[in-house]
Image (cartoon, rainbow over all chains, first blue to last red; front, top):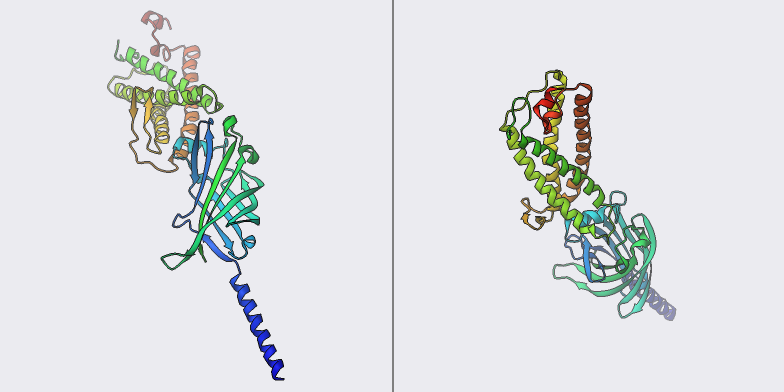
Length: 196
Length: 188
C-alpha cells in the first residue's frame, strides 16, 4: 500500500511537472509595438538600376504568437494602411497611392497572415503566409530572424524579429512599369512585440 | 489704347485675356497628357516641370490682370444684352477669375505639401509658404483636377456665348476683345 501510494504521488507530481512545462511552452501573444514605433515596414526598389529608393508604410497594426521552445508553432498577422506610404516626396507618394500603384481608394488595406513556420536553425525561420496587396492574395515566404528578446527596462517583456521578402510588382497586379531594373520590390519587416 | 475705353477693351486687357487663354489651354492639355506618360518617356519629368512653371507664371499673370481689371473702366455691355445675360456674364467672369486663382493655388499646395519649393524653369523658386502636411497632396490634387474640368466647362460656355453674340446677335461682344478696327466694328 505504502509503495503504491508513493508511486501514485510521483506520477501525480510528474504529471504536474509535464503540465507546468507544457504551460511554459505555450506560445505567448505579443502586440506589435506600433505605439512606441518600434516596428517598421519598409520597402526598397531599384531606381533605373542606378540606385535604391526606399520608403515605408507609417501606419499598420499586428500581433504575433511566439514560443522560443517551439518556433514552428508561432504565427504572425499584420494589417497595413496602404495610404500611409511614405517615400519622402509628396508628389511621388500621391502617385504611389493612385491606380498606377497601390490604388488605395479601392484597396485601403494590405494584410499578411502567416500559415506555417519552418525553423531554419540559429534563430532563423521561413514564415510562409498569404500577402494581400491591391486586392490580390498570394503566398509569399518571409525570411525571418529572431533579433532578441527579454525583459525591457520598464516592466514589460519583448521579442523582436526582422523579416525580409521580395516579390514582383506584377505579382500583385501593380500596373505601372518602372523599367527592366525595377520589376521587383524588397520588403523588410522589423517588428518588436510587447507580451500581452 | 492701352487702357479700356467705355466701349471696348484696351490692348493690355486683350493681351491679359488671350495670354490667359493660351496658358490655360496649354496647362489643361499638358496636365491630361503628363499623367499618362510611361516612366521612360523623355517628357516624364519635363512635362510636370513645365506644368508647374507655367502654372506659377499664370498665377502671377492673373494677379496683375485682376489689378488691371479693377483699376480700369469696364466697357459698357452692348445695348442688346438683356439684364439676365449681363448678370450671368458677370457671374461667369468672376467664377473664371476665382478658378484662375484657386486652381494654380491647389497645384502649388500639392507640390509643396512636403516642404519642397516649386522651381519655375530653373529661373527662380517659389518656396513652400505653409508648413509641410502629410496627405495634403491628395485632397489638393483632387480639387486641382475637378476644378480644372469645371473651368474648361465654363470656358466652353464663355466661348459659346461670345460666338452666339457674334454670329447670331451680330453685336460687338467678341470684336471688342479682338484687335479689330473701329470701322470694321461699326459695320456690325
